[in-house]
Image 1 (spheres, rainbow, N blue to C red):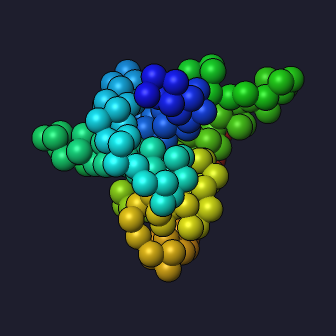
Image 2 (cartoon, rainbow, N blue to C red):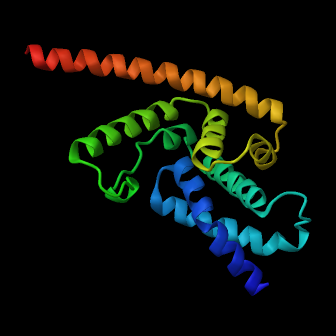
Length: 182
């Protein structure tokens, strides 16, 4: 079991951590939740039947751990909407110009602010599909949904996210105009 566990850890640790980090938006909490995932993996690996890929199985466990975490919180909605913890390690371009970094960081921050306004289901689908790069089938398997529900939720999430980003961009433009007039 040790070698199997080590192999799972080596192959999927970053995916599990990133998924949980995007969900809870707190590095320390994500690290704690990753440990919970691996405890559950150790306890349940013998029951893993291989009906799904190891990655979707692990992400499914991570999803349940995240949901349990939110349920345990007094006000889970407040926790989900906390600001994203930005640090310099989040942007990984080899030689971007300082202006490019600033613009990219602003756009990513705007996208995450808008993502926070989406429902939990919409956030899950966006993170799994576009950040974790899972297919529709893998996302459905991870969430325990039908592929149709994933597609519908993804469509609605993208539509809502686009609307929120346009609203945010419009507000930003008006705020910028007020500053330059004054």
